[in-house]
Each structure stands twice: as C-alpha cells, then as structure tokens.
Amino acid sequence: MTAAFLITGFSKTIITSFACLYTTYGADLTPAAMQTQLLAIVSYATSKEIPDVTDREIRAIFDVLLNLAPCNFLVFGLGHDSLMWAALNPRGTTLFLEEDPKLVHKILARAPAIRVHTITYTTQLYEADHLINSYKSEINCLPPHVHLRGNARCKLALSELADDVYNREWDAIFIDAPRGYFAEAPGRMATIFTAAVMARRRTRSGVTHVFLHDVNRKVEKMYAEEFLCRKYLVKAVGRLWYFAIPPAVNVSKSKRRTGTVPFCED
Image (cartoon, rainbow, N blue to C red; front, side, top):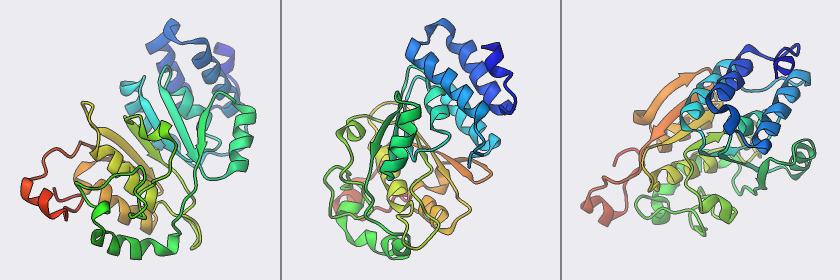
C-alpha cells in the first residue's frame, strides 16, 4: 500500500482520500472493494490524462461520501475518474450512466468490476430554453404528479432507464454528463431534472446529495436554479455546486389539486 501511494504524479487530494477510507474501513473492505481501490490508485498514478474535475471539487464530493459510505451513489458520466468514484464508496453501490457505448467498452476493459448502464438521451442542447419555458404546461412534469419510469409525456424525464436505476433510492448523485458544449449535444437538462425528481421522491430518511459540475455554463446554472433550487445549495467549489435536497413532503393540499407547483416553490 505504501509503495502504491508513493507513485510519482498521484495527487495529494487522492492520497488523502484513500488514506481516510483505509483508516475508516480497514479490514472491513471486501476483496473486490480493495481491488477497486488499488486499481484506482495505480490508474491515477500512471495515467497521462488530466481529470476534468479539480482536486478541490473532488474533495468536496469525497467529504460527503466519507460520511455517507456505504451508500447508493449514482453518477451520470463515465471517464478517467470513474474508478476513483467507485473506490471512494467501498461496500456501497456506485452505478454509472453513460451515453457512449465505445467509452463503456473501453472503461470496462480496464475495470470490469465497475457497474455501468448505457443510456440514450432524447434532448439536444439547443432545446434548453424551450424546454424550461414549456415544461409547466405538462402536468406530468410537475409536482406532485411528476414521475420518471414510463413518463414519455415529459421530455425532461429520463423515462427509459434500467430497472436497476429506478428500483433504488440514491443517497448521492453526481451529474457530470452528458455532453453539453455544442448545440446538437444532449445537454444536461434531463439529468438535472431527473436528479431533482429522484430527490423529491425519496422515502428513506435524510436528504439526497446532488453534485452538479460545469455550472459555469448557462444551461447547467439555469436548470440547477429551476429544479435543484438555490435554497438547497450547500456549497459552491470551482465549477461544482453541491445541493442537499429533502423529500417533497410539505406540498399543501390546494397545490396538490392544481398540479402546478414549481419545483422550488413548494
């Protein structure tokens, strides 16, 4: 273990993170969890790729995961940092959702233990303004009627995910995908909306911790303020916003009857 930590190029943040995990869990780690962590260490130490998420942003997420783990952790996006996220949730369930089948095969070839589902998005970034201005006209997009599975009438809802996603309540959600930097890209409108719905429909105790990356971009910021809500914003670190969203349990009876409750006004 000491030798692995001393490999040149491994960042101080990641060293600290894994050291904390081993101190916390120690011998309780399963062989699979330990293998994932060791593989993540070697991968980060030897790769020439630079993660898009900064050390400070990683630390902000890790601090939450350290208190939650083992937890249910849903990650939109797959990439160079995926091994790390899986390793930072030992004994928990970390599931990745990725749009690019080629990238899925590439990552699984290197780390076959990672849990990942491919996903198809039906939105495009140039639709962002229209979708946010029109969703209130569809009752199935609005609390308390909004739902995900099979909700084809609400274009912002990811309605055809694997049962594995719908059948589990997620304690933490990290949105770092899909692509959102050109007009025909899927954009993160649906992932932000879906994370908000998942958080609102939580039945277990506690809040849902939602992390959104690239909030320096117009669409991410606009949709975060509409669906994740400023009042639930806990911390902003670099290009990362961290929200702690409670279940929606306090909607008044009158608002329930109208079905026109904006996400951040109930």
